[in-house]
Image 1 (cartoon, rainbow, N blue to C red):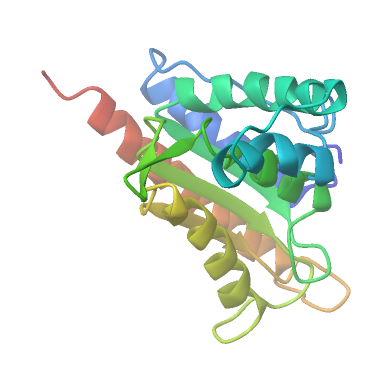
Image 2 (image 1 turned 180 degrees about the vertical axis):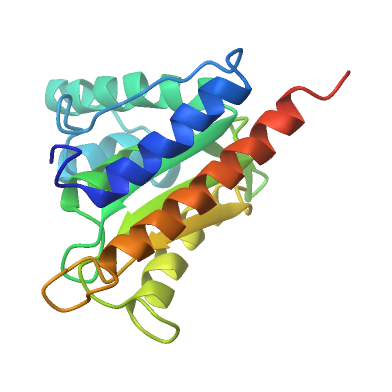
Length: 206
C-alpha cells in the first residue's frame, strides 16, 4: 500500500526520518515484504524446520531443502539486526497474512533459536522491537488492540525478546472518526520521540 494511503507507513517514515537526523550512523536494513514475499508456512517447511528435532534420521526432500533456503536468507538478515521495526495495518482483527508468514518463517528452530538441554537459546542479537500499527476502527483498551499485541509480544518473547513497544494509530476511518488526522499526528509525535530516545542511547560515550 502506498504511503499516501497507509497511515502506519507515514508514522514509520516519521520515525526513521527523525532517527536519521539524530543518529545518521545507525544503519537501517529495509525489507518490503510485498517486494520479496516470504513463503507461507506449509507442510514441507514444517518438516524441514521441525523434523530434525522431533524425528531422528530425517532426510529432507529437494522441495523441503528449497523451502529451507528461503528461511536461511531471511534469518541471516534477522540475526544481523540489533533492533527490529515492524509496520502494518490491522486487517480483520489481525496483521496481514504476509506479515504472519514472515513471523512464521523467521521464528524458526536452528535459525533464530535452538534447543539446548530442552531449553530455548536465542540465536539472534535483537534486544528491542518497535511495532507501528494502524486501524480504521477503535483499538481502545479491552478491544482488538490487546489481543493483537498479546499475539505479537508472545511470538517475540518466545525467542527471548521481551522489550516490545507498540505505537497504535487507530480510528483512521475519517467518515466515522472526525479526529482521525489528530490521532495520526499524535502517533507521529510518539514515533519521533522514540527515535530521539534511540538516538540518544546510540550516541552515549562508550
